[in-house]
Image 1: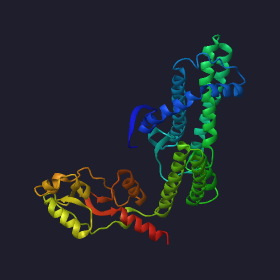
Image 2 (image 1 turned 180 degrees about the vertical axis):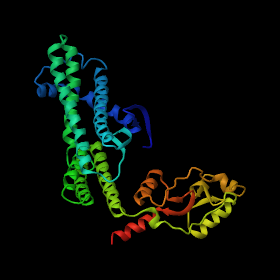
Image 3 (image 1 turned 45 degrees about the vertical axis):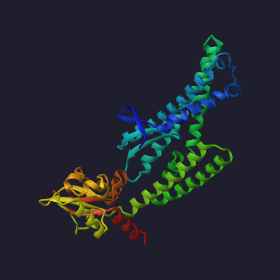
Image 4 (image 1 turned 90 degrees about the vertical axis):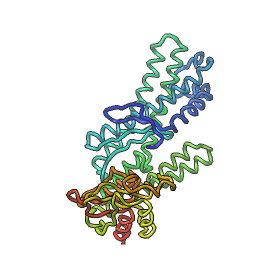
Length: 377
């Protein structure tokens, strides 16, 4: 994800933090610290223990405890996402990374059409892990209260672990709401998919998710809560995108790249002047051409490549000076949905089709969308 920094790896999975996390931690710390006395009284009543506030309210301790609780919250989110990822790995799904950001965490997985048998335990394990962390934190509250002889120190530990216990139990309950693509929504889809085709189950789960998104958004506006508004936006967009992906996968499940590629491919040579390529783009309305030399694909040149060169330099340059040499290609037997996934991930509009090291055709995003339109009839 753009704007993310790698901080390490766990079980071979890169752990990233997004810049929004660095923004929200001080805000959370300030919110927690500014309400520390009220929160201490609330935690005392919830856990039925007396919290000594001598250290809690001393000097900068309020802000320090706010930072500790905020970091503990996102550590709990990381454990939650790791649980998802470990189960996914055991089911043979590759995990690209885990990213922590403003509204929680995201596990980037390489998976095809979701399998309800795999998705159900994978979706449930995250919330259940949050529940386990919450209960363990709550147990530590009583251990601290009973075994630590210094009441001020015990008060600090009871505050931190009590707060984290409640937050993680809240994460457990919140994530089980059937708001697709949250965990509860995925559980709902897995349940529905046992009784109907996957694309229909996904559409229903996505509709439920969008309803929850609207509710969260309304509450966020009336409560002046930007986090709820961001969560609503994430759920609405995520539900729509995943529903679209599953629909496309269903419509294109039997279509290969060879079935729909254009075989009459307009190519250019590596020695052609860039100016002539631009003129050809104007004439053909094509924004990219494979570069072929001696019948072998050696690169691809696109409008984006042209834009990288100042206009004054284009007149003296040839195609090989600006073309992209690392070309993503596919064989004719590749599924079209794989071509669409590669285009989305790499933000490209066309993929050359190569058969036995020879250019056999080209498939474009426009071609795929036209086939989808026809399949929807």
